[in-house]
Length: 166
Image 1 (cartoon, rainbow, N blue to C red):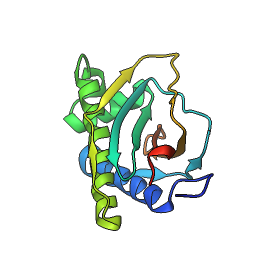
Image 2: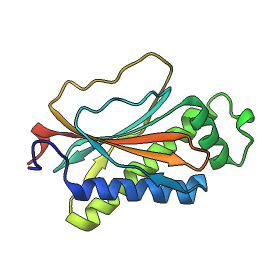
Image 3: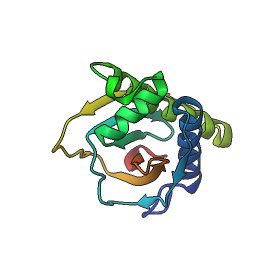
C-alpha cells in the first residue's frame, strides 16, 4: 500500500503525463504542470466537473475540474469553434470526452508500467455552481493543477479508494 499521506508517485507522474498529452493532441494546447497537492487540499473553484471511475487491483476516480469559461475554451478548441458558439450539449460532451481520454490514457500508461488492468466507467459531467463533491469511502487524494496558455487553471484529481487497494 502507498504511504498513508500520498498516492504512489508513478500514478501521479502518469496522470500528469496523460493530461499533458491529451491537451496537446486533442485540445491543441500545451498545459503547464504545477505542483501536485496530496491529501485534503483546498478543492478548486469549478463550475464543470468530469469524472471517470476505474476498478481493478486499484480502484478510484479521475476527476477533471475547470471553470465554465475554461471549459468553453477547451470545448471550442477541441471542436474548432469560437468559444461564444459553444452551447447546449457541446460542452458536457466535450468535457466528458476529455475526461474519458485522460482516464483512458492514464489507465494505459499504468497498465504498461505496472501490468495493472482496470475497467473504466463512462464519463459523468456536472455543471453548476455552489456544489461540493464528497466521497463516502476512505480515500487517498492528489490534486494535479495545470495552467493553460491563457492563464486559466484546471485541475485533474486522482482519488484512490484505500480499502480497495490490495
